[in-house]
Image (cartoon, rainbow over all chains, first blue to last red; front, side):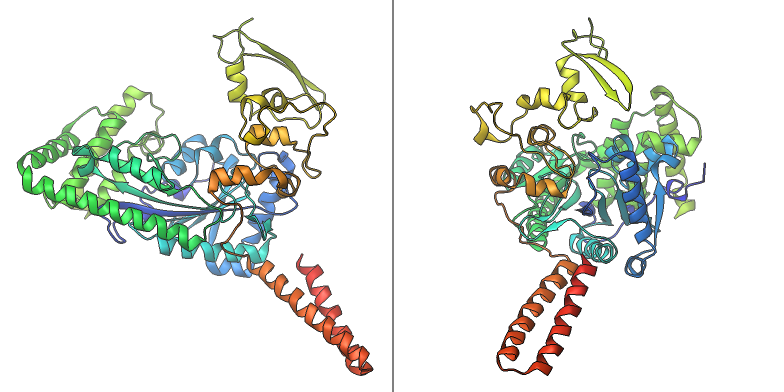
Length: 357
Length: 174
């Protein structure tokens, strides 16, 4: 099994602090779905047909236009062991369905992991750009440039009336899904999240948990994305999402200010307790870890705690996932042991903060 | 008989799948069949789990209440073999030709999902180039007609060569 450097380090570019509004917006992501003409879509393709598409797209990597937006390293899913696949998923570089449902699945990764291009997921090509903070426009421009480069090397399925042809009708037209990962602890503490998020879903946007479709919102992290992909231009889709997210950011900041002015002592106590537990606990399940990390992240953002950083909290969020724990400690673990290793990893990381920074 | 998937509910669906001579028997309950529906590839024309369950998922309301008679030939994509029933069941196109095959049925669905039916976003560069070449060709052909009418044969020959060049370009691009 080759040693996969992408699964060794926990911090992708998107997890480092940066970008606009990084106190509320964890990351911005743009995904473009594309398919090739004269090849059946992955859902009906035979193994050979899927391999052929994979070969053609990996072949496109050496074309001049794609090289100029790359380089990308091809990783064939079936050559990876299960832990590596899980880690790539936990880092949001591949989707669960690429692991579970794909024939001849592969991913093309940029060195800094800000770009991951999935092959033979639901569509032949899914170009994803993931940036830290609020950088939707930047992510879209990068994804679009990569799209242009592939378009010079392969034949896309496109129809002037219906747009880019995707396997699922919910993606057709632009094939664009833009999403923003938000950390909304103050709104959650004030019980206002439900109200705001239900308003969001009324304006054609979807709200999901940390790991996309069907996943639960843990650690006060919410993903907001566009639902409509047809009949609007890419710029309109991005602008709509952008303006709604800017409002949510404002609400969250307002709620944070209220917490500081109206219940400073109580919120400080909550954050410090969570920090203490992260530093000293010997067992911790994933749900608790997310909640404590969320508290401490809020503490850093509010300037109530200076012993750690947002980047470190982002890193912990990923490193405490099952796949990463297994990778880090190199042992197979049941859920009870996992809680022990998770607590150990958090203690180590927080204890070493002064050395690392 | 108990469902072989969940081992809980009674098996109500029994069928045999033969792929490349390999025979597999299925005894499953309706719940598991629905969940597994996408994992069991449908064989075009023949019996498939998708055909059986198509009635359960119906996103094309214009068809509701109409029972398709056996005389009605079902739409089927000539490229990938996906039938309209399968498309409705899976909610996914099988290939780019499905778009043409099912085109007449798409508008109500797209209106419901997206609120509109036509793409207004990005155009691929190459399709853009093709559109440009076609326009250019159209102009050249008009000039050609004119120069023939004016008996300017030298110019006509030149235009003809240019048009041939563009035709070649189009066939290479596509």
